[in-house]
Image (cartoon, rainbow, N blue to C red):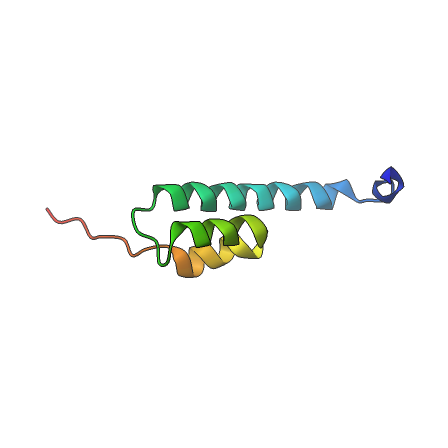
Amino acid sequence: MLEIFDGANWSVIAPVMLASLMLFLLAFIDLIRQPQPNGTKVIWGIVIVFVHILGPVLYFLFGRGKKKEKTG
């Protein structure tokens, strides 16, 4: 099974994996901190977790609630 990774170019794979992990964490933390996202938090959590790279991107494009403007 590990023979698959012998020819892997880790100088390309490692940054992509790190970027994917960071995007996942940012989306999940933002979802938790969002008072009212567009849709339910459970559905967006499932999308973020199970759709991998595309899930967090979809959340940031469509799932985040509108920011309230601060007055004063």
